[in-house]
Length: 210
Image (cartoon, rainbow, N blue to C red):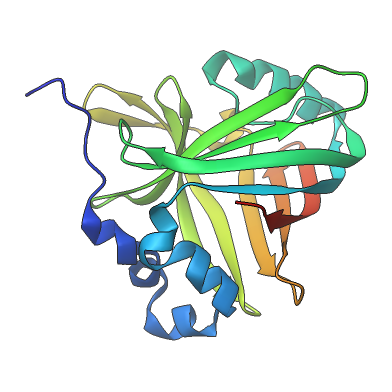
């Protein structure tokens, strides 16, 4: 084994259509197909927008701070109409695309949140947050929007992926991206814990800026 980072496989350029299936892929809004299909799916791009709602339950606040020990997967504060910038770029070490988000909460330091979506042989779509932790994602289409839903969290130790019990995870995570008529898109995040109920909710709108 060499120390060289893995290359992004050209086969991944059609991986989202493959994960969804041809019929579901065709039902997606054309802007979403452009964003997640073809070579546009692996180019660096920037977005700017506003999270109209960043909500956490008291348990969610605690979970968000605890999760800082394994990376930067969650925003740390509550807020409304929070300016957010997003950089999406290839991560050749992990072999996927990193979503690098900066939240500008009033009176706070910039809150940076990062994760990397990768399509892996056999595992399918996974999202990695750091220190070997990540989650398996199921991707579907509904009402022309793309939906990502976590099915299990895991901890990677060497060659092995150790499942994290649902009760010890932040909760089932659902992300929906919906194209809007003006060329922007709506982003919605919900995290529901099996015991604590809904612990996170975010909703905002974004536009590509470069």
